[in-house]
Length: 408
Ligand SMILES: [Zn+2]
Image 1 (tube, helix red, strand yellow):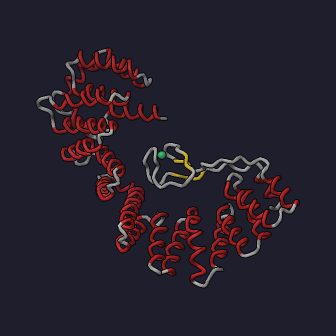
Image 2 (cartoon, protein in one colour):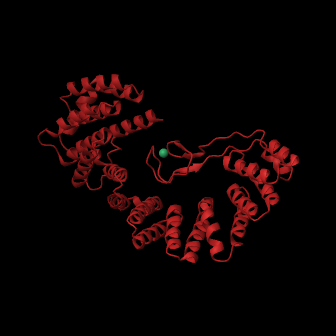
Image 3 (spheres, protein in one colour):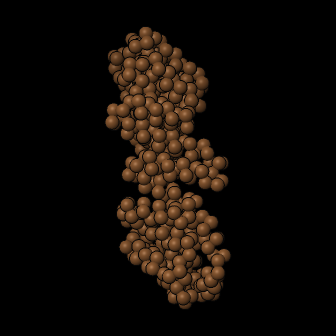
């Protein structure tokens, strides 16, 4: 996967996609064509590209170095060579290669921007955060619409938890020509950045500012789960329990697949509103809307157990386990409930029958972008740093049809 990403990146850089339209503009200018034609006439150039396509970086470097030499060292090939060193992990060599290009006289503005862009990527790979930020900022001064520099800059700010800067950078990305089609994704990310700003305000115990940020996040993306949870928490601590419950209920409506995140909060809040019956009613509504909702069944079962109805709870749990035999939490609750009922042999054997083919795994959350796995639901992927890419993976129960047919 990593190799494929690398390869796509390299080829894109070669054909001028990764650096936006910059190459297109750049190569039309005088003089560059001559270098390129000379480079292309060299057999080493084509050989180098072939090795690159085959992911054979070392021979690609050899051939491209020869091609560069034969063609009078054109800037373009040296940029690529530097990028290849970086991809090989030779960051120092990459920086050297790219920095030496900055010394060339008569660099055009876009050439300058492209060299700085590559240098910024070198610095980022080497962990020289400040210098990377400086390089990308300089690229944007030369070429304000450089999407590649903007997205790298955003990620760097995020890594540093500089949420205000990350936010401003994402806004610039959203304002680029042609970005209108991606408006929902931009808003989704801006909402997470607002949420992070709210978390920072919470740490300073500035609840007013925190609530304002969480509300802004929800305005940007009404499905943003963590902003709803935290806004409700702020209202709850302020003693505004009805408002807190209202916010959490809005999450349930806007994003039913994330509703479970608000379950324990709502279950705790309703009795304070003298309305404990609202929690089981909410679970039943969710189950009716989505019969596969094993979490609503689980929550309702625990609620019924707590209210002295372990028998009814167990029926719900058996249903839930039919829909998701891999959820460890369900099995734990089932054993607790069976114990509370003194392990009646008929129910124990029904449970054993139900779970005969179940496979258990503890990291069901998976990033759709890079396949990173996690025990918990995460809002930003620690591997690819993308926002809101986790889904819960479920293996279809082998005997679900049979289980349903038996009326469980
Ligand atoms: Zn990922």
